[in-house]
Picture 1 (cartoon, rainbow, N blue to C red):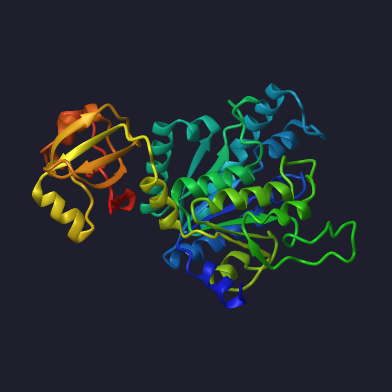
Picture 2: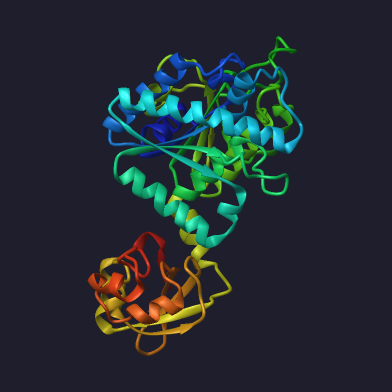
Amino acid sequence: MTKNFASVVLRDARRIVVKVGSSLVTNEGRGLDETAIGEWCRQIALLVQDKREVIMVSSGAVAEGMKRLGWATRPHLIHELQAAAAVGQMGLAQMYETKLRENGLGSAQVLLTHADLADRERYLNARSTLLTLLKLGVVPVINENDTVVNDEIKFGDNDTLGALVANLVEADALVILTDQKGLFTADPRKDSSATLVHEAKSGDPALEAMAGGAGSNLGRGGMITKILAAKRAAGSGASTVIAWGREPDALVRLSQGDAIGTLLVAQTQKTQARKQWIADHLQLRGSVTVDAGATQKLRGQGSSLLPIGMTTVDGDFSRGDVIAIRDLQGVEIARGLANYASVEARLICRKPSTEFEKLLGYAAEPEMVHRDNLVLSR
């Protein structure tokens, strides 16, 4: 892997998830670091001006809550963690809202739990909301919903949350800002011979051996969680950078192709990862049949499938299920992710999108299957 290739990976990233840890956000537990948060927001504004979409995943609610409550050590009882998160989240959201607005950007607070991303319909709802916010030029600021989680549904660390969000929105890159310069061959605090790993492949087993354990008493993560997060993000084609959060202009320089921190390169391109998953799906819960005009547009123009081109709906499927798309002879010509459940699809079959709200009681996507979520059959 060459430096030029590494530079292109970040330089060409248009949708970026940035994750910052508790120790950075709260200045090692001394309270929200207004200067640091303001600096990240300034850089995000520059990225947005450069036509990039940025989502912020920020730790710090529990740590800020601990400070406000006067607690010196992180509690172990779940209800105390939830209380600290509830107190701290107020200040965390307010700080990001203030600093982003100072840089001409709107912000939105989004709290997620594992259950939100495990349930397919809630997953798609979260995805639609985030993509709509990005389209509106608003920066989503995401944190785990610590006020309602329990041990069964906790992400475990916001590095994992960052990777899941990268998967959710099909980001090009995940940038994890931490209190270390990147991944070292050994713990540099204990081994003076440790050297920085500039580039590697996401998922390389040797990386986990280098990573070690958690290094902070404020957050739940450590370098190992970042390595595993990079591996998870790579599943949807997102490469990951692990870099020092106080590196001057780190986000801007990364977007310009500078080599900062550790780059872990995904081995599968974003589009290939999603469409291969769709193509390889074995359990199809239903199908739609389309007329000759829709068949031609799908095959010849790479269009999305609109309900007005559908003639029949078969099977019992939910929003987000993989369905087959068949021509009038019953031959599968494509498959993709359904934007509507079968019961809704039957109502809007042969109908223009202008009638959806009257028929369904709400207005959502105009497509039955968006072209980004559709793969033609061979």
